Length: 148
Image 1 (cartoon, rainbow, N blue to C red):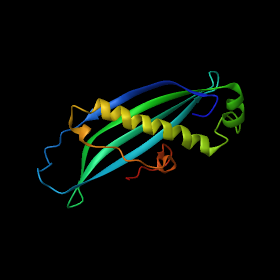
Image 2 (spheres, rainbow, N blue to C red; image 1 turned 180 degrees about the vertical axis):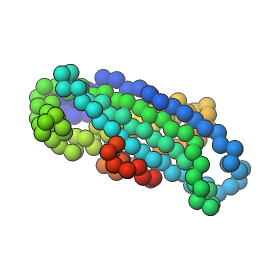
Image 3 (spheres, rainbow, N blue to C red; image 1 turned 90 degrees about the vertical axis):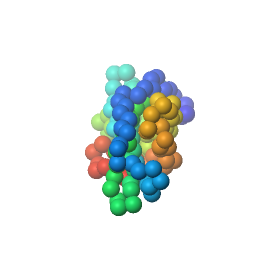
Image 4 (cartoon, helix red, strand yellow; image 1 turned 135 degrees about the horizontal axis):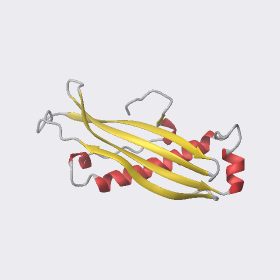
């Protein structure tokens, strides 16, 4: 991790696993995932919280999407004063460097993948594996959702 940045907290904030009746044994399915990330800052504490939501679908042979469930995690990062002033605080408190935004979302998403594997191991959602992706491709809250 970048010098001056520390993970303070990592947790699942929302989890729902569905067991759809419409899944047929031996059917042809393809996995789809909707990923959305949001970032909030606490200027006083020099902290940034990244929330990542993953909704997992199966697409059947007639292109219908079947919702398997969703999981949301929050990762809170703390910054040294030097890194905060150089990379975060500029431009009215917004990130002055999109690479930092993408870097933090990448760490948060990779953590979410592991959290989901552990949390979902005893239910239907545990059969899905979140894909490896470029964190720059994860939709930000203020943009429209898309499926990967």
